[in-house]
Length: 141
Image: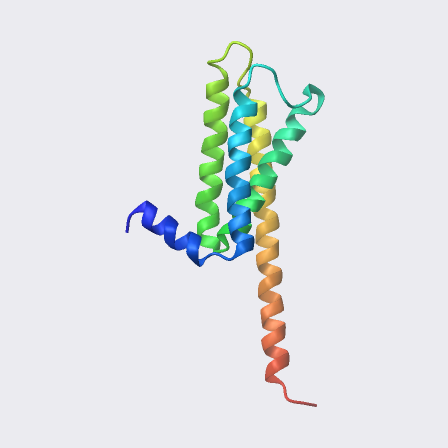
């Protein structure tokens, strides 16, 4: 099945919340690309690494919640990390921006932190399902 066919299937199978999350990821990536390559930095310099961490944490969290299936989350994290590295490399080609390993590291840490939160949410959802099925299976004292 082609990529576009799978994308079409995913889009029509997704509920409205997942569609909004996907649109949020795409819009945020577009803005991040612009902001990362613009002549004047958009983020305040004092909080540069924090902005990188929070930005990629939010992106990974949105992507993870949109994808739902755990087997899709790790590949999405790797794509996001590769995107982060590509942006840092592209910044070295501009006259006003610098590609920094520290930014790449902050991005990666944000992605890892989001993966930990997604894993915790997955665990809690599993516990809730087990509790619900266990309670439903008991009919009385």
